[in-house]
Length: 190
Image (tube, rainbow, N blue to C red):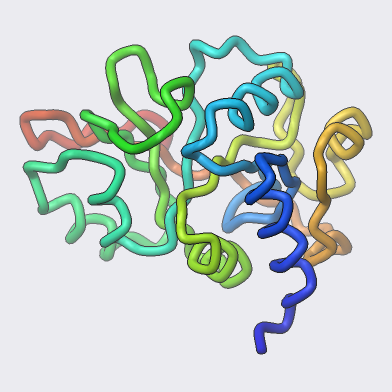
């Protein structure tokens, strides 16, 4: 049995009901929901007081899952992903099978293959991608550990994961790259 079984089960129940969670990722703590549920995505935008024109990241548990949510013609992106060790979010063109309010106006979506064991297990058991946006009000600094997260965020979600709350090591957001339609790699955030 997975060490954080109770946390995983509580998250699954909330996600299945269209709720939102606060959870640790392979980078900073994130606010998450079912990435295919438009109403749940809207709740995150409202909680963060963020314009819904700003896209959010989704997490998947493996490279193969990416193909369910984007049309990819240039498969060398998978070789690139496997070769990097720092958490890296890739912006892909031609998103599909996701909540419409999660995608950018140009039809792109930001996806990261999560390497954190807790997240991988949660996403694997849920069977769908999960939104991951930093646990802060829009325009405020990113919370780099659980203790930095505002009470407005903590009280605004349906479930707060217990796992890793006590950690004080400061985390950093992921790198962000874009794989454009010509197969070119563009670094957005190193």
